[in-house]
Amino acid sequence: MSFPTIDRSSLGISSPAELQAKLAENEYLADEILATTIFLSLALARPLLLEGEAGVGKTEVAKALSRWLDTNLIRLQCYEGIDVSQALYEWDYAKQLLHLRTAETVGRGDHPDIEQLENELYGERFLLKRPILSALSSLGGKPPVLLIDELDRADDEFEAFLLEVLSEYSVTIPEIGRIQAQVPPIVVITSNRTRDLHDALKRRCLYCWVEHPTFEREVDIVNLRAPEVGATLARQVASMVENLRTIGLFKPPGVAETIDWAQSIAILGARELNEQIVQETLGSVLKYKEDSERVRSISISDLVRSAVQRAK
Image 1 (tube, one colour):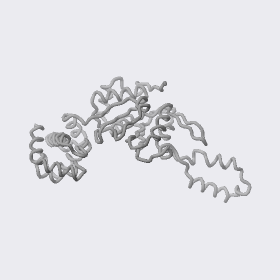
Image 2 (image 1 turned 180 degrees about the vertical axis):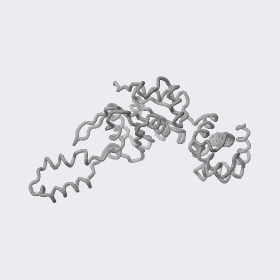
Image 3 (image 1 turned 45 degrees about the vertical axis):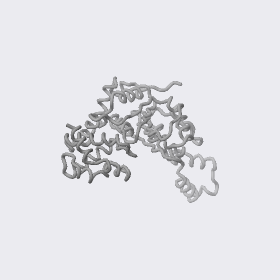
Image 4 (image 1 turned 30 degrees about the vertical axis):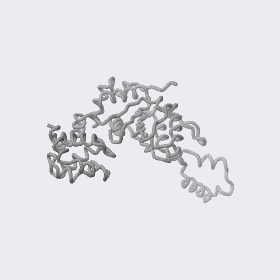
């Protein structure tokens, strides 16, 4: 199967390193493997499939791309039970009914032209475009970024539908006809791997497993996203989070929680970690009662001491 291609020169980059720099300018620090995969997905106009634990920054890739390209970010949040109409299109039945009543009011109801009325009712003015159709309907210029978030939450039938759309970047609406994307959207698919996605879908994508960042990269992320925190506290919080991810928590904290925690501590006026401030702000980084209890059972003072030492 052939895929449409995008002229790399129109994006202003010629290498993964340049892309990595562009993402950094837009507040996303990608490692070399992720930057290379994103670069190739753009060059080949192939969907990008990012898998990894919740909170590692998969969704932020799409946001950073849209900021860098100054283009629309169209997000489809998947969930259990999502169907095609919620992702593709629906007819505005209330507006159609109002149109019929208006036709009756002006006298068209007595001698209606049924075919003309039907054509009016199923025109684009009554079409509610959902995320996928909106992305395919983009008229030239820069391609929009279509984020299909947490696809693993949807069922097999929806994944099969998505596979069909991504094969040709087109859909058929019975009342209107076939809609083909003039410019293929930049597609970013994320999965927390609560279930395995089908091989057929994966074959159409470029794939990258996204890990939690290394300690130094996470420090850089905190400094970039929350510069008011200060270098010392950023290192100590990143070190503390690194420790928390190794003690078997039900929901290990992600990068977003690291940033929230560092900002929360800074707002309270602290510039370094201590046992009391950690006790008071655990709710900024841990979101389950069992995880908070586990941390307290291990000894917060020991965790803080280890984090401060690691951060030096």
